[in-house]
Image (cartoon, rainbow, N blue to C red; front, side, top):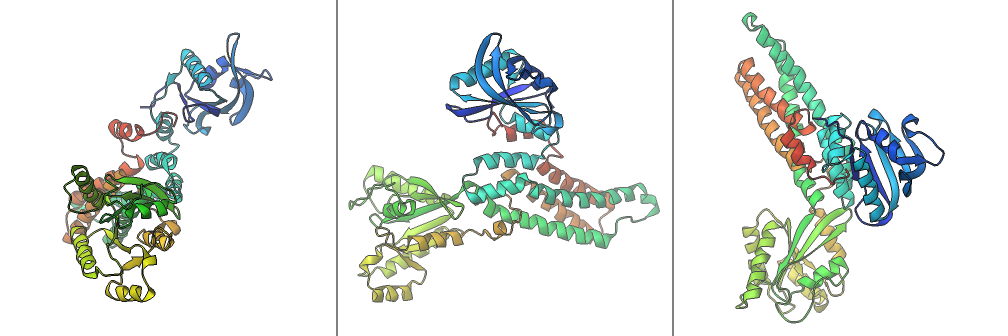
Length: 461
């Protein structure tokens, strides 16, 4: 699978900038670079040590393209595990294109998406879960997703899976050995120790599987739908949360007819707030479409912020009925019930209402009162204890799927052990569990799987 081609790609974002980095990797990377690089000190870069920097010019015969800084990484001492050269040139788009085209004429080919990291995996520099963490690290846009990606790239998740797989493999070897001596009715694998190992593996797998609920929302952001009747202050609340005039606010009911979305990072956790059309009976065709979208966004949201139509004059019973409707329709979703326009209430009125509706939060979105408390409440819905304790958190759907399948096989082995199942039948389920463990780290892989994973990378990585 390891291509012998020497590949080239722009490693920095496309477009003009102060500098750009062009990456070359492959067995001929240094020799190709030497054909177009003229060192200011006259050095032959093919004879220089790994991890050295060289100032010079990119040239094509007598033509000089740019003054550059060239970085050398030899053999297994590089990111890809093969000869790698990085050319830091000026960030002109013209210069970038001219240098890449020159390298293509000298024998390089354009890299495929993620091919540098694919080569790092194939050359044993990273396992598959670490390689996937590279893409997550590039995509991370808040502290929490960055921390998870860094932990996975350092091998936290891989090490945990590898340890379980190694222990299970040792017992699997003993079970397989018993099959060779089946006529002599001997047991090499201590069944008590094996039972304890399976229980421990089951516990760890369940913990990792459960962590996906947290990891997935941290990685992708937590969608929060802001819902309620027209004119209760949904758009005003969105603007207060984002601290900018993101949504149009007016006294006219039904101003918001489409959903408005924006993201906010609160204490390192990404939230995606969705301002929706006010829910009411209407003959307006456009507004009706917006209300339909409101219910769609409520389906997709992890948290529903319901801004009640409560006023100092009353409406408690109506609010109770609406809260129950939302709970019945979306029993799995976290629900925050808001009474907006706190400045219109007296302290006595607030105390009376809270006695009837203790889950209610009073805020004034217009005056930015209670908005910080609302953010704290939203954070409380996210279990980041594991993140703070540096525990492994699963964020990748492929890993989650493999963990589920591995757990199913482990539970089959447990059942077989309790039922006195023969060693040859237990061995089948053990092999399957080992297979799913190997899928995560790449000890078991195929071209189609690798193609799907690395196709999502940027070209220069």
